[in-house]
Image 1 (cartoon, helix red, strand yellow):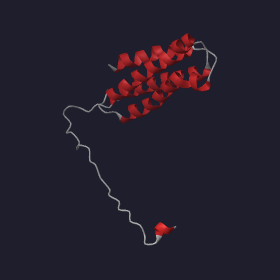
Image 2 (tube, rainbow, N blue to C red; image 1 turned 90 degrees about the vertical axis):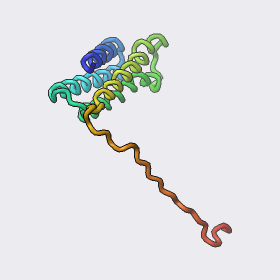
Image 3 (tube, helix red, strand yellow; image 1 turned 135 degrees about the vertical axis):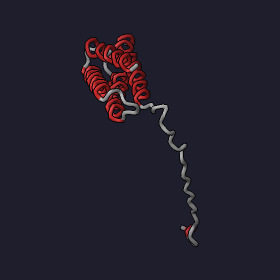
Image 4 (tube, helix red, strand yellow; image 1 turned 120 degrees about the vertical axis):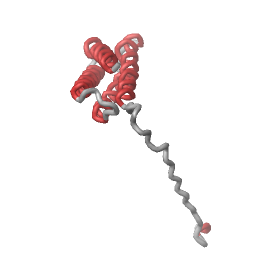
Length: 138
């Protein structure tokens, strides 16, 4: 599955790099492409481990790049038609975000034979606030 997800990231990020014509979209797209390539190569080199933190950490900045591709033109208020913005920025940015998040969730899975960790542990801290005598007059 990561092979096909990474190939899809390459295609979509490559599309943005080659077709967008704007540095604010092309640079993050190239960054996402490079980070996804490094993450995939590292994962393959390590013989496809389960729950690989290094690969996950490599993909997190790529998600940030993908989000920037989707919203960067809107934030910078660049001159583009609505159709061009959807075709070169918003659509590919949202698509890359989804693909990269799916990759992270795949790499974050645990082996079925592993012991499950403890359920969520919630610690509640109760704080009692009392007024000092005479403080209400101030």
